[in-house]
Amino acid sequence: MDDLYREVILDRYKNPQKRGTLDPHDYSYEDDNPLCGDRIRIDVRVDSQGTVTEAAFSGTGCAISQASADLLTESIVGKSLDEIKRLGKDDILGMLGIELGPVRLKCALLSLKVLKAGVYGLESLEEELA
Amino acid sequence: MSGEATATKGTIEHLRREFPVLDREVRPGVPLVYLDSAATSQKPKAVIQAMSDFYTYQNANVHRGIHRLAEEATEAFEGARARIAAFIGAASPSEIIFTRNTTEAINLVAHSWARHRLEPGDTVLLTEMEHHSNLVPWHMLAAERDIRLVFAPVHEDGTLDLEAYRRLLEGRPGLVAFTHMSNMLGTVNPVAEMSRLAHDAGATVLVDAAQSVPHLPVNVADLGADFLAFSAHKMCGPTGIGVLYGKEALLESMPPFLGGGDMIKRVDLGGFVANDPPYKFEAGTPAIAEAIGFGAAVDFLSAAGMPAVFRHEQEVIGYALERLAEVPGVRVYGPEAENRGGVASFTMDGTHPHDVAQILDRDGIAVRAGHHCAMPIHQKFGLAATTRASFYLYNTRDEVDRLVEGLYKVKEIFA
Image (cartoon, rainbow over all chains, first blue to last red; front, side, top):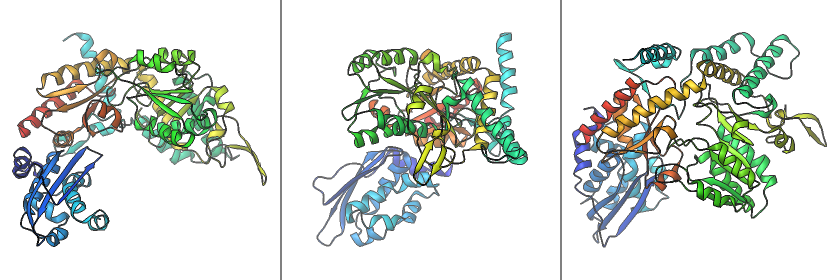
């Protein structure tokens, strides 16, 4: 199988570790990519120090978008909100272990966009992902 | 195998050689299987050559120069218009307005006809299966002029609900605008009957023919269309040029579209006098090489014969529907083969259309994944996206087999 559908991506797509919703949660945000209909929601719980204690994602979409959401959601548990703010495109691609063209990059980055929008609001988002 | 089938196979191999790109390998050792003609068709040598020849030997602006090149350019440009008029059975070349594409043609009707003819409170009747190009211009007009939009619903099998259509006509819409063939479902609508009913109700009829003129014989008089829009690039021609057909009397009565050169008879500092149709609607230097390429495309399709093109596509789509039905978990949307053109939009259980398209691409199979600029009809069927294979005169049953083999690979990967 080629790079794009590496074992980690198919495995995460078929057997996600962090699929679900959190109730209650401290932060929740949902967004979609209307081009392909991918939709992701991420719920986050943080402690009084601003460290993520639990996170979950829900939604529908392609293997790339769902696998990256699962990997991202898992990776932020134990991280501070400051650390989340520093997460970028390369972190997602590093977790997936692949290179992506511009169309599929949108799929991979949807979960990061949702996470950051949920935690910090949309304003700071555009420049960070640009 | 019958002699007839063999002959067909020989003919299609001959025809495929006219399209240079069909010969290429997508990656070393992986030949192209192009199943995305509903997005844009491939171009035959004759079209590429006609455009290249124009730039090589004749290039000049049209309608202005007295010199030899300008005369030749004008003759070639207007000759193309005349052949396009004949291709769709228009009464005169002056009923053929060159636009950028179908979208611009529909916007022209919204801008220069509907904005002046429709009053606040009037209704535009559309259908649920429209492409965004036949929705958004009306949404924009509705917001601007307080026009009401109503939609004829689509049955579960992808055909239009004609009973509902008749009932909606009782509301006496000023304009009825609908697609001849759905780019998602492949549904071929009964345009002649729909036009007759709309005219009986006093409405003007606009037909979005972007998916029909390339694939089946279209005659505007038989269809009863007042306006009909289509694009060159979906019918073997270049991008950047399309047509709005309009009945002469309607075009005469309409104000211009864009302002500028070529659309005027005379200008002084106090104002202007508009030119006659079609020039009234064609401001500025037109897409000259593209028009000439469009003319060559029409010649190519005329030589192939539109009834034969349609028959071939019916055969290929019939075979495709049969083969797709064999693949477990695949669901194809839209009507039976006899009511549809060469389009098959489908979903696969457990696999997103993007992933399907990406895996097919590894085997050189080009399909489209997404909402195909028809979000409302996807929503109707509860879908965000589909994978679409679309066929044209150059596609073969072998390519359908390659598609199906590819889909089995997708299933293997996502099992």
